[in-house]
Every structure is written in structure tokens, then in C-alpha cells.
Length: 192
Image (tube, rainbow, N blue to C red; front, top):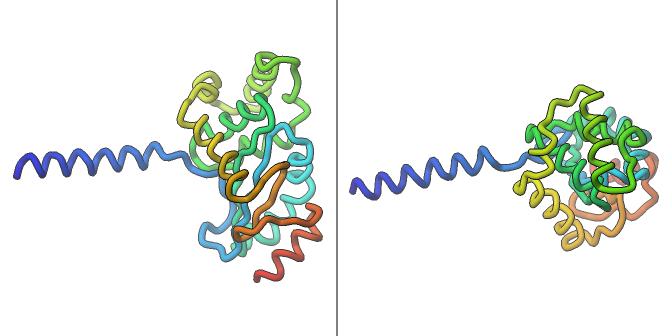
């Protein structure tokens, strides 16, 4: 009986530990909203940066802040610089979009370099200049975060046929129109 109790306690604490280590999605809005938006993005994609500059603020104001929708940012890195930036954006593991939004808003400040090493140096300098306190080497070398980012990309291709960024999924259906706020709003209004 003692063995069963000890084994049960071990599995209970192992499960708790695994939950604590689970990587949180970067999510904005009401977690239980009727409208669920997934944005597959690459941090070096200029169209993704434009989405964050031109569309996302209106989407946030009208749908996310009001509780009508939620958006989950998923990683679809198109190159090594985007891959490392994705890992950094997930590194604090708090689900907060602060670093992600900062990287998009200031994309031209850090997306430079002819090699991965140069890109990493520019990314690291940018993070420091913006006051983002992350352990850069730990972030880009964290196998669990790396797998998380790569699995987002695999999931995008496998389940949603993602082949470009940004790709928007609304309630598990791929948004096929030109990505601007007018078209996105029309699609969302039909779901309210």
C-alpha cells in the first residue's frame, strides 16, 4: 500500500511539474471568446509587421479588448533570424505579447545581418536597448522552446495549409481574403 501511495504522489508531482514547464501561448483577448483567431507569423516578415501596425490595433480595440474575440500568435519562422526571435518572444513564458509587439514595431532596427551570428547580435542589442531582460543565450538554446516554435510551424502546414505569412485562421477556418481591417471586420461581424 505504501508503494502505491508513494508512486501516486510521485506521478502527481511529476504532472504538476510538467504543467509548470508547459509553454504558454502568446494570447490577447478573452480566453473563452466565441471568436478565436490564430495568426501564423514570421518575425522577419514585413507583411506581418504591417499587420501589427495597421490591422492589429483596430482589431484589438474593437474585438479583443471588448471580449468578443481572442487572438493567439503562432510562430511560422521563415528564416533563422525569425526562428531565434520567436524563441526569444516565448522565453519569459508568461503569454504576454510585449516582446513580440516590440519586435514587430521595431523590425527594421534588428532585422539586419548577412549571417545568423550577425542577426543574433543585432537582435540581442535591440532587446537590451529596449529594456527587455531575457537571458538571450538561454532563450535561443532552449530545446523546449525550440520544439514549441517548430511545432507551431508544423501544425500550421499540416492543419491549415499555411504557406505564407501572415496567415489568419478564424474559428479553425483559413481567412482567404486580402488581409486588411475592412475584410477582417466583415468576416468577424458574421460570427457575432
